[in-house]
Length: 312
Image 1: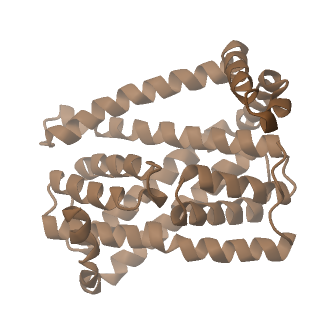
Image 2 (image 1 turned 180 degrees about the horizontal axis):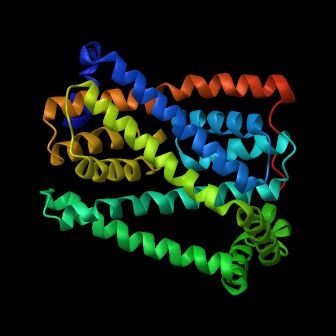
Image 3 (image 1 turned 90 degrees about the vertical axis):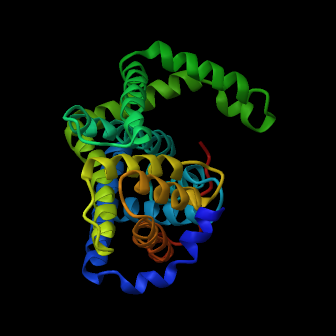
């Protein structure tokens, strides 16, 4: 709570930041969103940039207003893409697959700091441990992904377990019939789509986080700090993982307090860390919310009516 109060009561300090670097941070955030749309287009098998972009922006905005985070955002995006004519099963599996790839990429980012750690660059012990945690977690996620994409038996096992659990809920029991084979069909569709453009998918997932990280670096330059890239990268990954916690919309509060603390561990002064965090969250968290509302209005104007009711 003291950290949160320090962050949110320092908003007047934003008047002193270098506006050029703030604009640069905004451009990097926009590029990060563009990379996300490119990845999701591949995953859901749609060529419609408008539908993917507006649904992602709207879902992202809703997920930052209401509790539930990624689940809330995914639910709205699913219904909007179904309204745009994308098959429901493909939307659900495609968005899930792209989210999993983005999560795995985020876990793998600390590995980029390994050369700095091995070369003797002084990095706080707490941040240094995140390097090895990220490496282990990345390998585990990669192993799960390989099993899901390469073998049918794990998906059938998951489908049977999910079907058994759904069978206990009257409104879901009938829909769970044939779930294992349905998972395999959707997996095959994603694999076929990404098989033609898997390199683009990987590049897009890395670009999403890289541009977002560069937005944080630009925010630090905006307050007159020249950071150590490897240490700031570890601080960024830690804060991004905190942002995935579903306790508050968009990790609100967790990211502010966590990023301020980890930037301090990265060698950034306490005052500069607070203002840089405010600047970064302004361009990456707050500004995309009205953009999402505008995107939803544009979507409604093109496709009409409320988003289609989910039936899958």
